[in-house]
View (cartoon, rainbow, N blue to C red):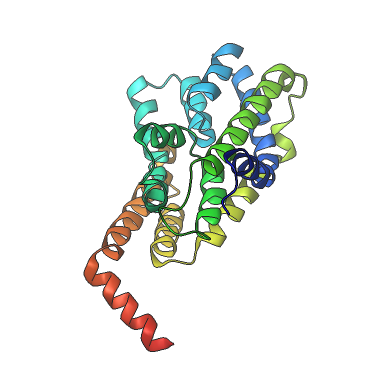
Amino acid sequence: MNASPLREFAAGARDTIPMMIGAAPFGVIFGTLVTASPLTLWHGQLMSLAVFAGSAQFIAVGLIASHASFAVIWATTLVVNLRHVLYSATLSPYVAHLPRRWRWALAGLMTDEVFAVVYAHYQKRAPGETGPHYFLGSGVAMYLNWQLWTLAGLLFGAAFPGLKSLGLDFAMVATFIAIIVPQLVAVRFIAAAAASGVLSFAWQGWPYKLGLLAAVFVGVAVGMVLSLMENRPQTKQRLKNAKERTQ
């Protein structure tokens, strides 16, 4: 018996709580950085409301503080968020049957944390048998959480000027590790992580963190190419035959 939409929504929100806890210090630090930048407080909150992408927001605030051009800010945040293309391709079989309005709404709520929670849930179900409400619950919970902690940083961050030096931002690093490691079960994910990891280390000397951005771009490209190759009928048949031989 399928759960009601409300139960699915609540389950998605509940399963996202650990990720919300990890994102809390990140949101506070973002709000604090805004108070030290040329932006006003309402600019910072509006950015969280409209952009809803932590890493892109951090980069944008840094670039704004250094008086970078709009083109540089746009291009940099675009490259950083290219990983969402891989997320979308991965979740596509589970949401392709949904009406377009639902897919647009869910796409707007996609974050690294939401992807990790939703994909783990969807893997337990067959494609085409999943509704939108679990995804919606996870996304709305993370969205509201990000707004809350951004506001906390904006209002109270200035009272704690040494907040960033406390190392609270490691909570987000730990969250990303928790997101990535469970996903390393498919060739495309392992290859993408390996490519971006090795190249980001090799190119760390590039100015303006361009090496990191280039590594992200290459990692996403590797993941997308392998994903397309795995979805080819010939490849699927070879993988099926190989699996049968090992059984």
